Length: 451
Image 1 (cartoon, rainbow, N blue to C red):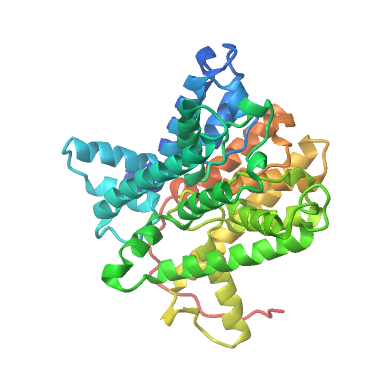
Image 2: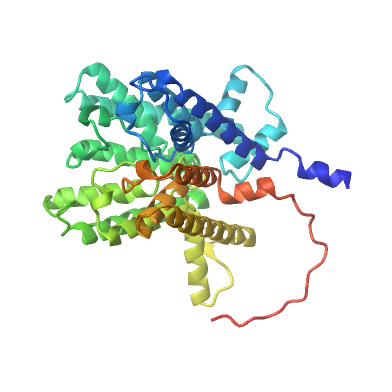
């Protein structure tokens, strides 16, 4: 009996990840609640500091205050560090520091890294880790320079460089925080650049690269040597492409007659705005149009895109595009009378299918249940509450401008949802549920009527 208790209390990789993110959020809450973190020198309320720290660490982007006007330079730097740690993962950064001091990486550390990066094998794990750091710094650096070059036309060079760096890190990590409120004095996002192809394309590329995951980026960069992509990369790229195009066409169709969004724009700007929000909705969190003024049908479409989310091992959230692909594959196989789900001439394992179904159901229950709870706490329509809830779970950061007006208890609930969305409901279930022994027998098969 004692042996069982020891096992259940052991620090599993899932527990290490959960505790680690929790500690970072607490530390971030303390720093953001300090007076020097605010532009006016007044300490931020503890609930708002907790919400902001959770949103940054979980790379969500939901905000209760305007980042550009409320926070001082110190507060913005703290926010940016939380985004970077949350995007890359604290274990990735911790292991990098350990490697820099020539520390040996234990088997336990490797298991936690494997869990954190959603990597299927410990083979070449440290090589992938080094590539993650290299790719992140390179992409963020190039993105910062490209954005700064454009914004130097509109603002002093020093400010343009700072804006470029802040937004490149925030956007690549799919966090969605922006500083343009410091210029316009209100939540504005990238509305000023809605018709600017240069800014739109740079931002879309940053969101896309952050959303497909480091494993896929590594595969793409080494394709000229290997001349092949893994099954994971093929599924992520193909499903991402389908979702981006389908989402953009639907947004265009639904919003092209909306006078508050796309009606008055040229066809080129309509197309640009549609693709931008199709890409951003699955985890980017930045906008060029007012999501609050979109049609209800478009808002519901964005809920679906946010729920699907980005790729495993990326800075994005949601149930993940691979899970959505498995669900579609299962439906297709059932309709065609096939026993196996096959992608690119590869059969998926039963474990992968069961994990996808479990992840979807846990996410669906969490989002719906939270939406119902918020509807009893807030005197507001259900769709906006469901939108904010899905955005929190999917760490997407899109908002119908409701977040700052929520009660403190609702903010705390969304903090929990953001935390669950970042570490994953399945990971948390592994963390709090003792590992069961392998069954040595099977029950006889039974049949129930389906449909």
